[in-house]
Image (cartoon, rainbow, N blue to C red; front, side, top):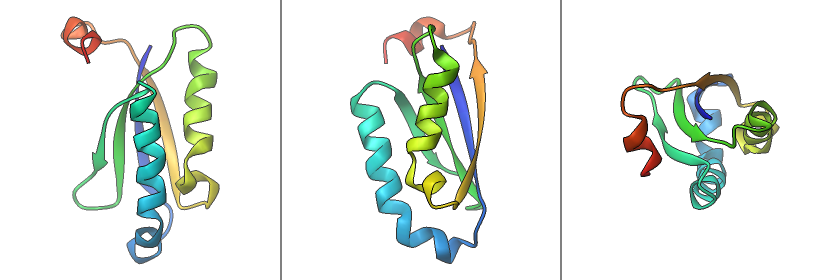
Length: 97
């Protein structure tokens, strides 16, 4: 299963910035594990987006674990919106990532 995660900051950017490196270190771990395909901040910088791949079985629970493991979530700095996604066009390209 693929998913889009939309992160919206819950605090002003100056309160977010000291924690960005911990958040990105967490995301690098997800990338190494094959869960994260791409991520980055939005412009204007009010949050960011993640493209995720999780197992079809227990996929929703896996998405919850992604959210709950993020330092941004643990510190109450960002809110996740998790959207399971079933791409049709480009699925073969995604599978090669």
